[in-house]
Image 1 (tube, rainbow, N blue to C red):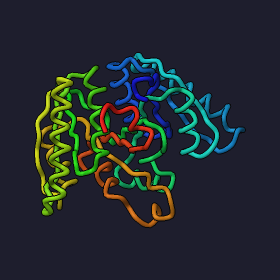
Image 2: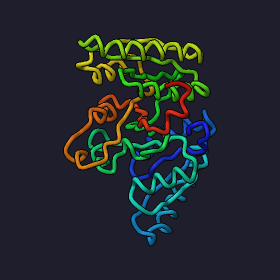
Image 3: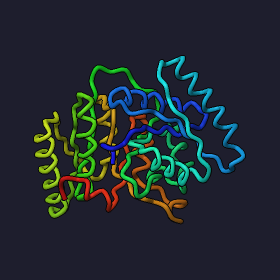
Image 4: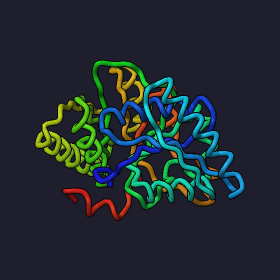
Amino acid sequence: MIENGKTIFVPWDFKGVSEYALDHALFYSSKTKLDVCLIYVVKKESLVKETKSKLDKIAADIHVRKGKRVRTIVEVGSFHSGLKKAADENQAAMIFVGIDGYKGIQKYIGTSILSVLSGAIIPSIVVQRPKRTRSTFSILCPIDQRKESKFLLKWIVFLARYIALKVYLVYPEFEEPGMNRKIFRNVAFAKNFLNDEKVDFATECFSVFDFNNSIVGFSRKRGIDLILSLTKNEVGYRSFFTTPKSHYLIANDEKIPVMCVTPTRKMWKFIPFK
């Protein structure tokens, strides 16, 4: 669970996008006091020593350039299994992954970056550019007809403990009245929940037909720092032939960071609502 987490993971690929992820991770680390750890996954045990040496040199350089100490870990296995194993063993609270636009998200289809920690209650934050220097911090949280959309509120409250933030609850409007009734109930719940937690928020409604584009456009205008997104476990043969709509939001053209939360059955028992 994120409250019990001690580490922020940054999967390293020795490319510029890893630096972007590190930039964001260090910001969150400075606010939450969580450690930052660079991780690289190799396929063979024989590659561990050499790779660990390279990572340690990068960690030393980070300390010189940014004045921050980071740990390093090298795991053996697939990207999915290695990262999950290390995250479990090191009590990871969140993972920051750098990508290079939509082309970057494509290379993870199959290993599934969206559900890389399938079964674990850990969000992955996908970034495409360095952290912007801003005096304010704002989050956009989509609320829809699914009961799982309430999961996103948990991370809003967690971040609100450490960062003064403004939250925008956005929701789609369907043509079917039944669908809207479910959404309105979830939005009403979210409002009450955030009011009780004394989190500053506002609400916006968009058409369901262009919801993701509306989210990105609104985020651009308001200077949103983080978009929350429910993601599904897409592992399977269909992952190679289809692309979930969430991929387009995550690799948005405005390069706004997106926190991906994958609902799991285990998560319900940690949430103070059902």
